[in-house]
Image (tube, rainbow, N blue to C red; front, side, top):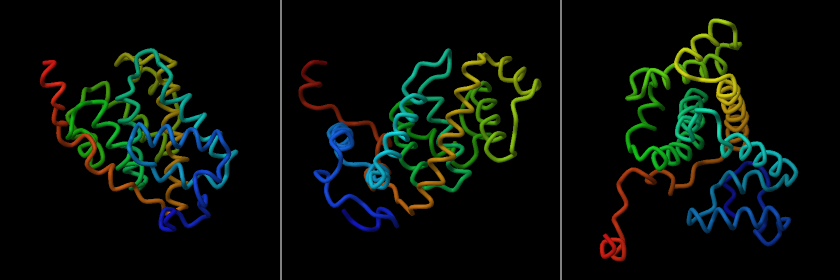
Amino acid sequence: MHHVISRFPLPESLDSLPEDLRTRILAVQEKAGFVPNVFLMLAHRPEEFRAFFAWHDALMERESDTLTLVEKEMIVVTTSARHGCLYCVVAHGAVLRIYSKDPQLADQLAINHRTACISERQRVMLDFALHLSFEQGVLDDAWQARLEAVGFTRDDIWDIGAVTAFFSLSNRLVSLAGTPPNPEFYLMGRVPRAPRPAEIAEG
Protein backbone atom coordinates (compact mmCIF):
# COMPACT_ATOMS: atom_id res chain seq x y z
CA MET A 1 0.00 0.00 0.00
CA HIS A 2 1.36 3.41 -0.96
CA HIS A 3 2.29 5.52 2.06
CA VAL A 4 0.66 8.73 0.76
CA ILE A 5 -2.81 7.33 1.49
CA SER A 6 -2.38 8.13 5.18
CA ARG A 7 0.06 9.56 7.72
CA PHE A 8 -0.80 6.53 9.84
CA PRO A 9 -0.05 2.81 9.37
CA LEU A 10 -1.70 0.97 6.51
CA PRO A 11 -2.31 -2.77 6.20
CA GLU A 12 0.61 -4.59 4.63
CA SER A 13 -1.88 -6.38 2.39
CA LEU A 14 -5.58 -7.17 2.30
CA ASP A 15 -4.71 -10.72 3.35
CA SER A 16 -3.30 -9.36 6.61
CA LEU A 17 -6.69 -7.93 7.65
CA PRO A 18 -9.40 -9.63 9.75
CA GLU A 19 -11.70 -11.61 7.49
CA ASP A 20 -14.73 -9.32 7.90
CA LEU A 21 -12.72 -6.23 6.92
CA ARG A 22 -11.15 -8.00 3.98
CA THR A 23 -14.55 -9.26 2.79
CA ARG A 24 -16.04 -5.78 2.92
CA ILE A 25 -13.13 -4.16 1.12
CA LEU A 26 -13.09 -6.80 -1.62
CA ALA A 27 -16.85 -6.35 -2.13
CA VAL A 28 -16.35 -2.61 -2.57
CA GLN A 29 -13.45 -3.22 -4.93
CA GLU A 30 -15.55 -5.58 -7.03
CA LYS A 31 -18.40 -3.06 -7.27
CA ALA A 32 -16.32 0.09 -7.83
CA GLY A 33 -13.32 -1.36 -9.62
CA PHE A 34 -10.91 0.05 -7.00
CA VAL A 35 -10.51 0.31 -3.21
CA PRO A 36 -11.51 3.74 -1.88
CA ASN A 37 -8.62 5.11 0.15
CA VAL A 38 -10.72 5.73 3.26
CA PHE A 39 -11.15 1.97 3.71
CA LEU A 40 -7.40 1.47 3.80
CA MET A 41 -6.91 4.51 6.04
CA LEU A 42 -9.32 3.14 8.66
CA ALA A 43 -8.26 -0.50 8.40
CA HIS A 44 -5.33 -0.20 10.81
CA ARG A 45 -7.90 0.06 13.63
CA PRO A 46 -10.37 -2.77 12.95
CA GLU A 47 -12.77 -1.99 15.81
CA GLU A 48 -13.08 1.61 14.69
CA PHE A 49 -13.43 0.51 11.06
CA ARG A 50 -16.36 -1.72 12.04
CA ALA A 51 -18.02 0.98 14.14
CA PHE A 52 -17.52 3.66 11.48
CA PHE A 53 -19.04 1.66 8.65
CA ALA A 54 -21.84 0.24 10.80
CA TRP A 55 -22.87 3.81 11.64
CA HIS A 56 -22.40 4.88 8.03
CA ASP A 57 -24.63 2.07 6.77
CA ALA A 58 -27.29 2.71 9.42
CA LEU A 59 -27.53 6.34 8.33
CA MET A 60 -26.98 6.21 4.60
CA GLU A 61 -28.71 2.96 3.63
CA ARG A 62 -31.82 3.09 5.80
CA GLU A 63 -35.04 4.49 4.39
CA SER A 64 -36.16 7.76 5.90
CA ASP A 65 -39.72 9.05 5.81
CA THR A 66 -39.14 11.38 2.86
CA LEU A 67 -35.40 12.14 2.88
CA THR A 68 -33.88 10.52 -0.21
CA LEU A 69 -30.45 8.99 -0.80
CA VAL A 70 -29.72 11.87 -3.17
CA GLU A 71 -30.57 14.41 -0.46
CA LYS A 72 -28.34 12.64 2.06
CA GLU A 73 -25.44 12.84 -0.38
CA MET A 74 -26.26 16.51 -0.97
CA ILE A 75 -25.76 17.09 2.76
CA VAL A 76 -22.40 15.29 2.67
CA VAL A 77 -21.05 17.29 -0.28
CA THR A 78 -22.27 20.66 1.00
CA THR A 79 -20.98 20.32 4.57
CA SER A 80 -17.74 18.59 3.52
CA ALA A 81 -16.95 21.49 1.20
CA ARG A 82 -17.33 23.93 4.06
CA HIS A 83 -15.08 21.72 6.18
CA GLY A 84 -12.46 21.78 3.42
CA CYS A 85 -12.45 17.99 3.12
CA LEU A 86 -11.29 17.26 -0.43
CA TYR A 87 -11.72 13.49 -0.06
CA CYS A 88 -15.37 13.66 0.96
CA VAL A 89 -16.28 16.34 -1.60
CA VAL A 90 -14.71 14.36 -4.44
CA ALA A 91 -15.82 10.88 -3.36
CA HIS A 92 -19.36 11.82 -2.37
CA GLY A 93 -19.60 14.21 -5.28
CA ALA A 94 -19.09 11.15 -7.47
CA VAL A 95 -21.78 9.23 -5.59
CA LEU A 96 -24.15 12.21 -5.85
CA ARG A 97 -23.61 12.53 -9.60
CA ILE A 98 -24.42 8.86 -10.04
CA TYR A 99 -27.49 8.84 -7.76
CA SER A 100 -28.91 12.10 -9.09
CA LYS A 101 -27.91 11.51 -12.73
CA ASP A 102 -26.95 15.18 -12.70
CA PRO A 103 -23.28 15.82 -13.60
CA GLN A 104 -23.44 19.46 -12.43
CA LEU A 105 -25.15 19.26 -9.04
CA ALA A 106 -22.21 18.24 -6.84
CA ASP A 107 -19.98 21.04 -8.11
CA GLN A 108 -22.75 23.58 -7.63
CA LEU A 109 -23.30 22.47 -4.03
CA ALA A 110 -19.59 22.43 -3.21
CA ILE A 111 -19.28 26.07 -4.25
CA ASN A 112 -22.55 27.57 -3.01
CA HIS A 113 -25.75 25.67 -2.28
CA ARG A 114 -27.68 28.94 -2.28
CA THR A 115 -27.16 29.32 -6.03
CA ALA A 116 -27.41 25.62 -6.94
CA CYS A 117 -30.28 24.30 -9.06
CA ILE A 118 -32.18 22.66 -6.20
CA SER A 119 -35.64 22.91 -4.67
CA GLU A 120 -36.57 25.23 -1.81
CA ARG A 121 -37.06 22.14 0.35
CA GLN A 122 -33.48 21.05 -0.33
CA ARG A 123 -32.17 24.56 0.26
CA VAL A 124 -33.79 24.63 3.70
CA MET A 125 -32.33 21.16 4.44
CA LEU A 126 -28.82 22.36 3.56
CA ASP A 127 -29.28 25.64 5.44
CA PHE A 128 -30.09 23.58 8.53
CA ALA A 129 -27.15 21.19 8.02
CA LEU A 130 -24.76 24.14 7.81
CA HIS A 131 -26.44 25.74 10.82
CA LEU A 132 -25.70 22.60 12.84
CA SER A 133 -22.15 22.23 11.54
CA PHE A 134 -20.82 25.74 11.65
CA GLU A 135 -22.98 27.86 13.92
CA GLN A 136 -23.11 25.51 16.93
CA GLY A 137 -26.75 25.38 15.98
CA VAL A 138 -29.62 23.70 17.73
CA LEU A 139 -33.02 22.48 16.61
CA ASP A 140 -35.33 25.08 18.12
CA ASP A 141 -39.03 25.64 17.49
CA ALA A 142 -38.36 28.02 14.60
CA TRP A 143 -36.10 25.58 12.76
CA GLN A 144 -38.48 22.68 13.36
CA ALA A 145 -41.36 24.71 11.96
CA ARG A 146 -39.28 25.76 8.95
CA LEU A 147 -38.24 22.18 8.18
CA GLU A 148 -41.72 20.75 8.68
CA ALA A 149 -43.17 23.49 6.46
CA VAL A 150 -41.24 22.10 3.47
CA GLY A 151 -42.27 18.52 4.19
CA PHE A 152 -39.68 17.02 6.53
CA THR A 153 -40.89 14.78 9.35
CA ARG A 154 -39.33 14.61 12.80
CA ASP A 155 -37.59 11.41 11.68
CA ASP A 156 -36.20 13.17 8.62
CA ILE A 157 -34.91 16.02 10.77
CA TRP A 158 -33.02 13.54 12.94
CA ASP A 159 -31.51 12.01 9.81
CA ILE A 160 -30.43 15.40 8.47
CA GLY A 161 -28.70 16.10 11.77
CA ALA A 162 -27.20 12.63 12.09
CA VAL A 163 -25.78 12.63 8.54
CA THR A 164 -24.35 16.09 9.18
CA ALA A 165 -22.76 14.96 12.44
CA PHE A 166 -21.37 11.70 11.08
CA PHE A 167 -19.67 13.35 8.14
CA SER A 168 -18.25 16.06 10.35
CA LEU A 169 -16.49 13.16 12.08
CA SER A 170 -15.50 11.65 8.75
CA ASN A 171 -14.16 14.99 7.48
CA ARG A 172 -11.98 15.40 10.55
CA LEU A 173 -10.58 11.86 10.39
CA VAL A 174 -9.72 12.13 6.70
CA SER A 175 -8.09 15.52 7.28
CA LEU A 176 -6.16 14.10 10.25
CA ALA A 177 -4.80 11.26 8.13
CA GLY A 178 -4.16 13.41 5.06
CA THR A 179 -6.01 10.89 2.90
CA PRO A 180 -6.49 11.98 -0.74
CA PRO A 181 -9.41 10.95 -2.93
CA ASN A 182 -8.76 8.16 -5.41
CA PRO A 183 -8.20 9.56 -8.92
CA GLU A 184 -11.11 7.43 -10.19
CA PHE A 185 -13.63 9.47 -8.18
CA TYR A 186 -12.98 12.67 -10.13
CA LEU A 187 -14.50 11.43 -13.38
CA MET A 188 -17.29 9.21 -12.08
CA GLY A 189 -20.75 10.31 -13.17
CA ARG A 190 -19.55 13.33 -15.17
CA VAL A 191 -20.14 11.94 -18.64
CA PRO A 192 -22.97 9.53 -19.49
CA ARG A 193 -21.65 6.01 -19.76
CA ALA A 194 -21.57 4.74 -23.32
CA PRO A 195 -23.98 1.83 -23.72
CA ARG A 196 -22.42 -1.54 -24.17
CA PRO A 197 -23.06 -3.39 -27.45
CA ALA A 198 -25.42 -5.83 -25.74
CA GLU A 199 -27.48 -2.95 -24.38
CA ILE A 200 -27.72 -1.37 -27.84
CA ALA A 201 -28.88 -4.70 -29.26
CA GLU A 202 -31.41 -5.14 -26.49
CA GLY A 203 -32.67 -1.59 -27.03
